[in-house]
Image (cartoon, rainbow, N blue to C red; front, side):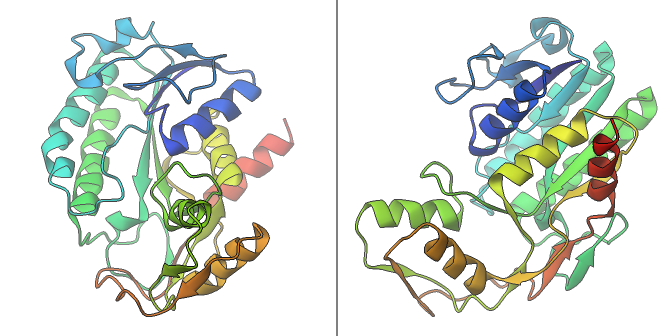
Amino acid sequence: MKILVTGANGYLGKGVVKRLLDDGVNVIATDFKDDLIDNRADIRCADLFSLDNPYEFFDKPDVVLHMAWRDGFVHNSRNHINDLPKHYDFVTKMIDSGVKQVAVMGSMHEIGFFEGSISDDTPCNPQSLYGISKNAFRQLISLECAKHNTVFQWLRGYYIVGNTKDGSSIFSKIVQAESNNQKEFPFTMGLNQFDFLDYDVFCNYVADTVEQCEITGIINICSGEPQSLSSRVEKFIKDNGFSIKLRYGAFPDRPYDSKAIWGNDFKIKMIEKAKEYK
């Protein structure tokens, strides 16, 4: 199996590439830069949007795992809307050329304000430019894959917990603040409940999903359980032995963040169980 991973130099991409390589997959990794990409991969730095024939350029991969997406943590950046047709053009070129399987990194922000467990058929009503563009991209690529009988997987990500400085999540920012000897970290009240998944588990789930093609459609890359933001962040600080303290109430909650939201993990459990028997 030959898998093309876009956004391979990103916070999530680099971990997924490593896991795929550890599993013995032939990985073609692409991004603007390559300083964080495992050098066991076939690395090809490129601007995806400028390639006339990306399928040939990347040596005819069997699978494309499209993780490239800028400003993922800047939810109302106009780049989400401006880049949407470029992402669509790139992936449709791959589909038209004959790639057998397309997997795309999605987001729970496609759902919008919702309380409870998110399943495949949960209605989407995104409340940010990021969520709107991701949801539109999902619908567009789903149609294109159906038209060409291409395997389609939409990997809906939730909240990822990692302890490295690179990245823009609250956990990366806490690591950065601790390394700068900050005494306090400005925080919300932390009452919202979200679905948290450790970084290594997330990368394992993504790799295991794209290494198979029997389970398709929307696949929640999640833990399946809600946990309050405050308790998960406090645990993160304690587990890493940090001295920094949370300054509760420094920021208001975002109005489009749900009070309690988590993913249905039925499909990812099926994928993991199937792998155990192989």
